[in-house]
Length: 370
Image: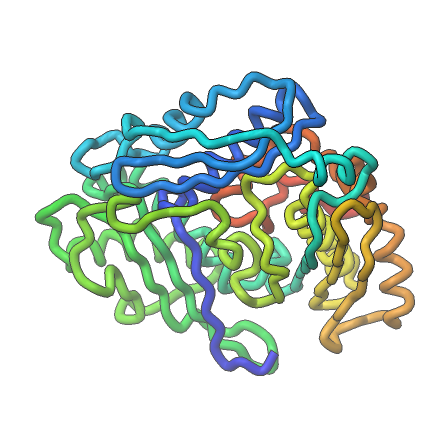
């Protein structure tokens, strides 16, 4: 990588797009809980005092769409009617059965759609994630914590982070800039907000990672005051944060979203498999950086493409790395689902602070399958 500075962003769990991702994934979880063979492809849209659910579901589970949706919205802090969006907002459900033309291919173990997926890992952090997105996720997670725990009592739901890291010869050196956006009650002065966010969010997270930044390099709420949070200010849609969900643009993206999809959809399961392989290669110290590419055709079990890029950082011959990689996991669609144990309700938690870099997920395990 030849960038001198690289920037990645994250968003809080209460960001409009993440509200949608979590609702869609909570529906996936509800379907899989009592019927592991469920097929789900659900999109959510949130806007001023309205929620729309649409998509396809094939399941023996009884799913209470409205109750699930209300629970997520309430949990994320949208309880105040003055936000012009809350758990009491109307919910419109437009969900039907999966197309039989798709189902026939999936029933035989084939992919639920075509597409290409990429997985990435780098030795520059303990999580084997790029440093910019790693910091950005920790900042938004902390932003949610200080609001929920009332450490900063005047914060409202919704927020973002953006982190710029300087690099020298492909290695991260310093944090150049941090940008935070945080909704707050009316009457709070910008200076007070900036001081509190630096003290309770930025400084603790950077210190935890062995980093620091000068307060003058922190930007808060670039347009000034931000008092109306959530969907009334910014309509949200499932699957619109695919770069936040993956590697912060540090690696390639296949373009397919993850949330709202059961694991027969290779946009999700294929991306998880690719991360699993890339992470194990780096964890085994076969390379300092690794990107794994996969591609699938709807209705077919096995990938039509699989390849590995190590960006010149390999410690062993590529043939040795490939031999190691392709023995880690059966890359057929049923092989990924079984190997990573994906037919279970684990997905709502993936829909905030990124799908990669947290060891609680099976695709993040090293030294053997979960």
